[in-house]
Image (cartoon, rainbow, N blue to C red; front, side, top):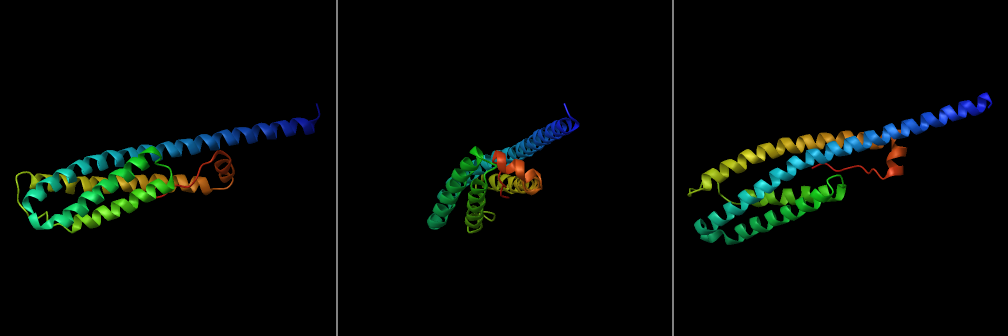
Length: 175
């Protein structure tokens, strides 16, 4: 065996080792992204239940707010459907983008109801839980967005971009 063959073999082994390391790093970053989304998923499920209960209570209290309650109910259902879609593929940019849009629609629908000033049997408690959940959800979103930013930086970094394109790693979207 010549020194050229040995050098080529060593270079080949180094390239394969680097590719395995880059692939493992991409998988690890994607797993962190999925873990961060799991927290958002759980918080969104809890919020959906609270909003459903809130709409039920407000329907009996606010007789004239039927269209606004229907809009809130529809926005909540849309956000829940988008959450379920994103839950299946939290790394897919399109699924996360649709969840972000649904969340914006839900936030707009929630601001149209005067629920903070109304009294009711369980309404103040539900409002407090929603406010607390919103703060926790904002924190979880920031954590998810940080994980997405780190993942996207790795996907776009040269020469890792070669491994990412070879194995189908695509940039993610922020929430």
